[in-house]
Image 1 (cartoon, rainbow, N blue to C red):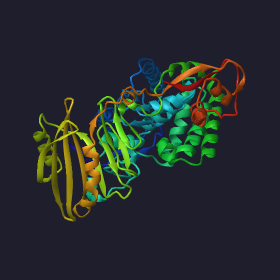
Image 2: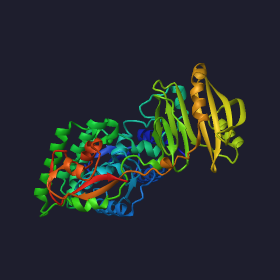
Image 3: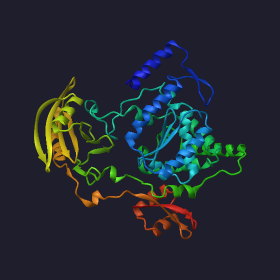
Image 4: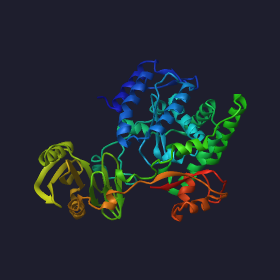
Length: 481
């Protein structure tokens, strides 16, 4: 199968020998140089979609899925590229984000669905993402940059010799994480206003939602908000521009009333999982627990960690060592060990069978020769409940001895999870409540028994401030189990 870089090189060569790579942009009507045809663009989306779904997992909510599909198809029909076969999906991630890939694929995280407070906010962001597709922003961006093979361990830069052990992001995930420039984001804002207005929504709400995201950014850092905020002009400029565009569309549209639909949307997300889902694994007191797999193991103090469907990764801030937990292929420990050696091109130094917390295991030391020196790997294969787990500790040979005790402690403390509280940990879910009397938002949270520690989080979730007055009968979001 050709990689994206192969396709990129082929397309580059084709442009040098042919002018046929010039195409008309569906939105602007202007000629531009692109590296692929619409058929290739659609094919890229079809290849990327299963990779994105595998990375995040789909969030199963038939009612909410039906809603985003219906609105997505309605908006796609009035867009600049109604001929594409669009698909709209909710992925199982707590991060507040929405993104699109070429060919008509649009994704919303459950995190962003939780933070919308009406249908109009959703419609504005939906239009923004469809705008990236109709204006071919992903395809244009490829003219300016190559995708990099990114490691997944957030916030820690591994030394180059170790980066190869971290599974690179797939082509689909690289497309999903692609950042656009300011001009592209401005254009998508404009298209978001146009498309949402055309299907009857009040696009002024889109500006209000961006204000909520800016508050979220101030509270939790840039990594927690959508990429389309990080490359955009100042929030004040953006919000004013979106609001002015929305007013202009409303004046010329001839539509008598533009919908907001707050209550109907809130009722749709009643019961939505918010924040981390413990069923996907969670860290508490420097220990990783996975209730579904029924496993646990410690994390070295002060090490960073990253949990993805493919791997659980741990590393010190220096980035000169890494530990990973993955599933290992094979029916036996020996087969699994051979698979590890083959995958990472390792030469076995020694190995022996052991029992770790009553579980059959195989412990192996192996080396990888590199031009810069030798990388040493301590690999422990553990068999439990029908799976073989591969836990690897990796460091330069010169530093391996200093890290080996930490590697061994984590691996030898791998065990079956038996704590009933951890096994039965329930996720937080959104509960929609009716305010009984006029009061401040903070007083409403107090009335419904919310912890004061979560007041600010809940105010952001509701797109309001704690001092805001809420009327009798209004619906608000609180968090329960």
